[in-house]
Length: 316
Image (cartoon, rainbow, N blue to C red):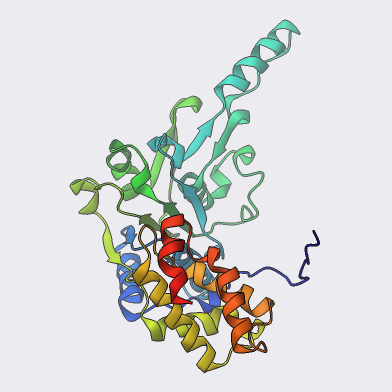
């Protein structure tokens, strides 16, 4: 079997091309103005996670008030996440093993700071005044040279145990925390810098009311046809040869797939991947019967279950 490898760079997200509707832009501005976390819900693939890249990119360009890092700090929530994990992690096992080894060799034990690693919100807080932070905690951070503001993304917070959001209330509001392994050493945000917190949820479980009261909320609706065409043209840019008519036809097919999917409707990210592959396989210059074949061959980019495949094949 011969597999043809197409020599073209992979699709890369460009925050400059992220499209925000008026409602989403207003929610971002309100959250920043009130210094409250922004909680986003919406179907997978509607741009919840990528919004953090867009916000960090835009704030970094605006040098009038705060010096923002151009990329967000990301915390990927897990089912085992605890509140402390958002601020720092401590490798107690390695510290204990090293301490025993050094004791056997009559050497002085290393400080716990050697085994601490700041995580998204903890690093954002430390960045606001790096001069007061142990250099070992910032030695891998490219933005440790001077005080900076940051965007922090807490992704899929609904995956965490129910107590996780409530355990964060004080720290997120005050933007400070204690490192108990360093005798409760405090780290807090300097007033001259800002931390913008964006949280995403797939609504897999309800979040506590006390937590919701402290957030600005926005639900990102799935884009309509005109918005999908605009997103495709913007994100694919010069890498695509699709005409307006072809894009219209393909997105009509995509929406039909979404309507007929039994278990999982495809998202915007899957649409972009599908369009890119169709372009790579010369869909534009192919005759009608060949186009149908190309579209069917790559249907697995849109549908991910046997039931959905059986339900949507007839559309092509």
